[in-house]
Length: 197
Image (cartoon, rainbow, N blue to C red):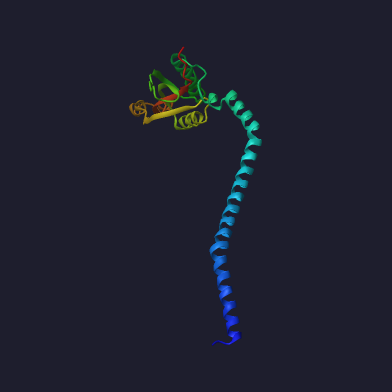
């Protein structure tokens, strides 16, 4: 038989193993579930804090939205007229004034139709033909790039003026009177869509 001391040690060892198994099988999953629950609680508390902050900011954000709707930041980019014919005339006046301010020579301006029913903003277009010098063209394009309402330049064609070539055989004073560039481009402006009655 085994000595008493060895039996006692063996009984204690078995008891310790049983306790550890009990802890591992019962208490371990309970602790893991507790930790998982605590993480979920922390996550939900964090979400709650974010939602409470958003709710506190809601009146200020609604007021800001109302201001934006009232002030409509897009309106400064649109032509004042809402009907295409009147908007085309307004656009024609604006480009004529700009070309005159730059000192270039306006040859012709034609209103062109730009019907795109699917576009979110309706547009009106012009075909512009002018003569001038490089510096005048650069200043005009810069003015159009920063112009309000928004104006887009498309299909820009810059050619040497054929009249300059024809006057090579004439006096130098006459050549200076003829602009050196012949420029054509399409100009597009935008108008607010009119609501159908």
